[in-house]
Length: 227
Length: 241
Image 1 (cartoon, chains in turn purple, red):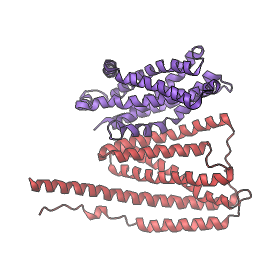
Image 2 (cartoon, one colour):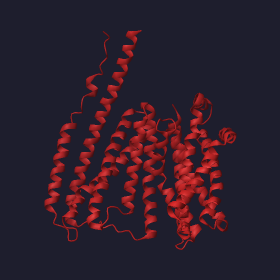
Image 3 (tube, helix red, strand yellow):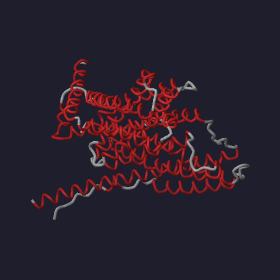
Image 4 (cartoon, chains in turn red, purple):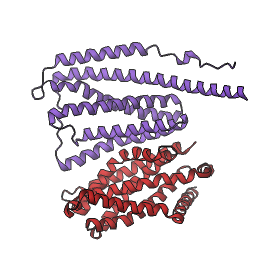
């Protein structure tokens, strides 16, 4: 039973990532947009290198949010053509497998964008990324997981409406404020030195946030996807 | 001439308690405001400015009740699938958004002469602003979703997740602020202000119940009208064929 669900999740991840890999158009565009946003923040806040380093955590996370939010609607839009979503829903098994599959595919997408974006940010903002790569990766993953969980959840609704481009950030970003605060504080602590010893508490906040909204979205998804 | 079915008027008539209760709520509000304004002496530091408390604090309290009602009605809708819970959630969300906006506006008006600033990143202030945004998102989702059943399910999901976020938002903003500076919330209420505040809290609660009742009644009328128009269009098409 469990194995069958896992293979359904795997099939959806494979399907979404294959569709992405064969076009690459969206991935390339999002990576370049992320680089562009990093540059724009540099122009807006620079050129003082020390000042830039101090705000690097905030810049990094806003870049993740603004570029990543573009990938969630697409994840469902490809299902809206030719009634693919209806067919997907007709397959036997738990609807939550669809959510988990989409979530993991989106997670892979955003993590890949970050793999390119974070070194680019390290170059542009002169950040000591390599010395702290392990804790930084943990914070990046925890923040990205919560972001992608809620992004995948709200896009299941927004992508099927006329105003999808504005509605998704309008629904998603206010919900992400605790995650943004926690991720920025933890990242800043890791990059610029954690004088107050607060980083551990912020990481715990991220874990609590991720668990609550992963379970909440998983529970609520079947009410959102059915039609 | 096709006969257009009219929805039975008995099920759509206004609840008999609604208008008298509305008058009671308005009069109670006027009385509570008058009592509070006349009873309380000018504050030592703030003077008469303190009296904004009698509208600011009750609207903040009752807006939290409103969002709790949205949460409970959303859970009940998903469990029972009865559209009336969805209409209650929508009504409470609308009133809650108005009260939250009122809370923020009144707080700013009070903060400018007291703290010298319109806005500060105080946890309560910031949480209230985020709440406003979360429920504005909830209402935009409703207005963009046309199918009734889909709107009810989606809004319920958003209403539940939004309410789960309230304590997390508050805690995160509080930790965020205490790292930077000690927060200043001059919220110690002197005993003789308490009566005025309590009276007005009830006044706002009564007004809230009246508004939600009224909004629920209007939502039922709107729903009946939509069904009626649909029926008419259906009958008209049959006649042409």
